[in-house]
Length: 93
Image 1 (cartoon, rainbow, N blue to C red):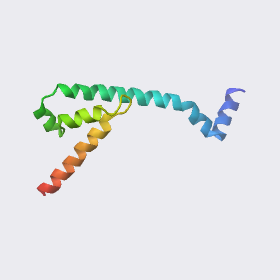
Image 2: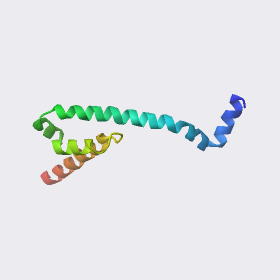
Image 3: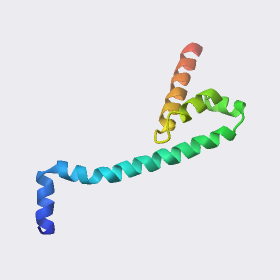
């Protein structure tokens, strides 16, 4: 099959193209999770007052890091901080 024929085949069958891309997407997702987890592990070095300034507690940090090696705790932590900031702005207003 020539390159043009392959291109036309994949246009007619986009699911085949997606199936070929999935391993790359998984690899990128794992790499992103690893890098985010590494950054969050560095937050352990901060003292409690600095974590509080970020809107986090040490217990929340440890809980989200314990959820599994391949999971990305950054999303859960950012949601926690967002919920806390909404809650505190409602109680102030």
